[in-house]
Length: 183
Image 1 (cartoon, rainbow, N blue to C red):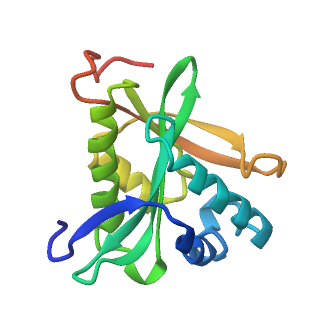
Image 2: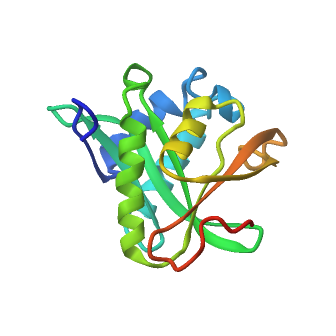
């Protein structure tokens, strides 16, 4: 629960394509990710999310549910990633524009971190928000991620467009790692 808004998650499902269309296809939502995705790319991502959600040990996408009717509010997920020789889970999230600013993404991301902590398969969680995406960077700070550096990378992959990102890393509880260690 987040304040007066209940937040929960469920595995991403076939009927959730519209959420991707409203978030990934929305120029306002994608301003920090080099612009909206095409319908073709959104459908490919939808199929990828469905496949990912079949095995939580390989990564998973979730639909965020918020409010008393448990209405779909966005997506949050994790997948295996590597940064500078460290393998871990990468996370990303989107909340519908009309529901932003209520702590929904933070609460949903916290739920997923709790789930992946129990998997005990990786020590680290990474997030790579644009340096200009103040909301996503604030979520990382609130959840205890450590800002390690900034880097430029091509996003979306194959687009030849560079995105300047903050590199955030969270050491999962019980991993035996010192969270103050430098990368």
